[in-house]
Length: 102
Image 1: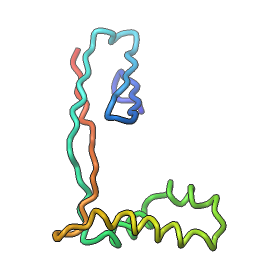
Image 2: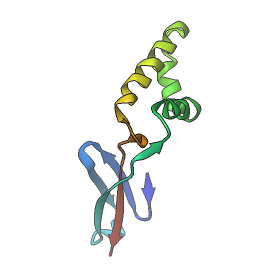
Image 3: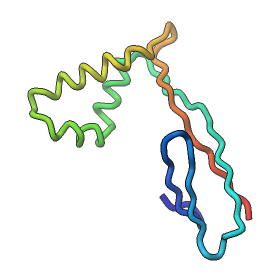
Image 4: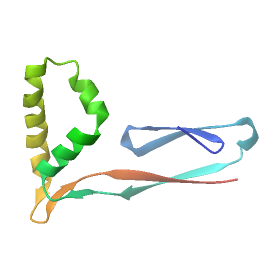
């Protein structure tokens, strides 16, 4: 992804790698993690949201025979059920808010 004069790649463990351009070698970046949980009425609603919106999941499932795909969606639903609370579904999510100065 390109933002301003930097090309960013985010990788596991919340690390941010940046590549400065020739003109901005003295710039400084700071990445601050921010909790951004996904809140929905239920895990079933989250699965439906993912089925409707997440093209990457459909691409991954595309390699499976058609008759095996429902079982995968059932497994996804069962895994997401662990994030149901009395207040509904709360899926963990973290964003990196990146700021830069010259």
